[in-house]
Picture 1 (cartoon, helix red, strand yellow):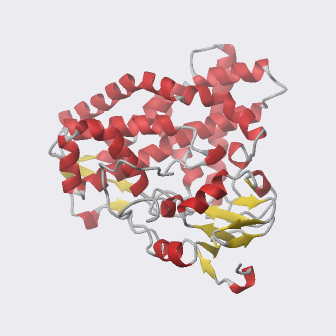
Picture 2 (cartoon, one colour; picture 1 turned 30 degrees about the vertical axis):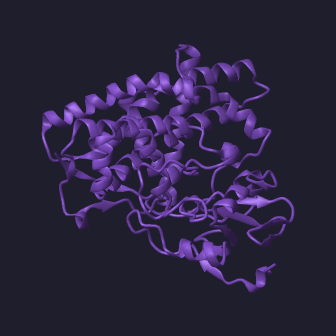
Length: 401
């Protein structure tokens, strides 16, 4: 097995993000060096797993720990250390906290939200049609749709979106915000949620925050106030930021693959299959993070990872692994066998995966059905992309129809 000292350390990310294109070095590494040494902008060196099987091992094997990152100089994209909370826990602590909200995100509960989500999507398209083209798809459709859904689920006033949508950037920023701004925005977000928690105690309602408050007050030995506030804030931010980004990403991919879009318009019942392929194909993250630390010596990809060493896993590279996906760099909306890991794997598999799937199905399905002549309103070179964030996506997307 290769020794750490004999393996060159690469700077990571390998290159600046280029729209939604995945760096070709991932494909080279999957063939020649599936576990490679990398150094992120901040923190200690790490191993990077690029093959599908190895990524699943790192994310799913209990011998790889998130809790062990606490107190370490974790490899990361941001100057600030990644805050604790549920993302820095292992079972049983992780399980204890996740159970607090898991029932709200089951497939059954999410399906109950589908009709309301369709109504919101239709209302947004109606407003766009009334105003007439061109319109910014990010501002007028992709942003308000998931925000309104998560607001209604949690019990957060939609009217406050101009506040918490700005504050939520602190969670996905690498360099778009200064460390001082990140600290200020997180304080604002936690303070805002803390006030809602107190309000629910005084005036109970039928929403997820109230259910969390009730669980906290009935089981004070199981949940702390800080845990409830941080988890609710995380759900609010993560519950809309990624979908806000992926909706225009998916629309962009469809509009730049006209043959696939034409197929989807002729096969609208295949929207769920198409969304799974888009989840596989679109690399949302600029790079991988949230290292898992080996708790004992473990062989991964033919390399011995020593106890205490961090490993980061590339979901984007795993989703292009040619040993799992036929012709992986080709978008195939009809792909039948698609075990992608776009929502992660293991105990930290995305809690809101079912909600995101439903929102993406409704959002893309509504665009395809309601705006059959939808197209990008400016030359592709004039599109503006987000920068300084852990996610890649369009900052603005002018469209016409």
